[in-house]
Image (cartoon, rainbow over all chains, first blue to last red; front, top):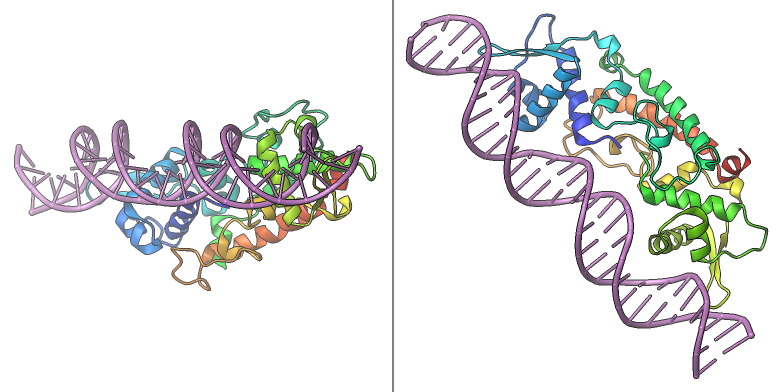
Length: 137
Length: 137
DNA sequence: TCAAACTATACTAAATTTATAGAATTTATA
DNA sequence: TATAAATTCTATAAATTTAGTATAGTTTGA
């Protein structure tokens, strides 16, 4: 399941994607438009900024706008930024690899191979969902 | 990601699937054989029993054994028993449907349709992984 | 009757999640 | 240059979940 943070991030990106080109959205505007707690959203937008998904303009008449093309922001990207690994166990992860704490022998682990398969399929599916594809529906 | 509980459940099932037909495994045997904390495993085995995946024999010389065929225990089943929904949001779930707390209009939600697609694909993949298929590798 | 095993329930500590609070900084413009 | 409006930063707190432990009870075979 997605955390609220990831869900809110996606909703915020969807909001931004639906604004006119060159429009800058204030946090309060996004929060109200997408039903997200404002102070929580502030943190999320900063994380999205650090991830180079959105840009910001400070000061009066400032706000946020999409930095990447909406066709190039995938569900997998946002999941990884906020919820981390796509894989079901760290030992099956590409970007967040870690040995399992209770692992005896990774090469002999009966679980790992199956979970790598799942990760490959899930990742492919999640990379197929973009902010643009969501907006279109 | 899977919780430790789900991972331990899968490891316990894999252990049971690799024993001789008619063999009954004590908790301590499974715990040591699969590197799972014994008291934690007790709870997990009871849950697996309530889910009709394993059977048990009480008293001296008692223990646990697979109840379902290992070909018919899927990753999706075990995930649902311990970690709940396969879907990324409750509103996109088949077995654990719930309206999102912050939902304004489900029919107009841009996220939901994409997440239903993901759930369909992930579920298919997870139903393809069985205890039997994992043991074979 | 005893030992060995499962069963049941309660409890606890740590980590994570979901926020909120408040102060600092930046910027446009009157 | 003062002010208002906005982002930015850091700390904190409440609630929930996770992971695991403790204890007592019940069942069974020898």
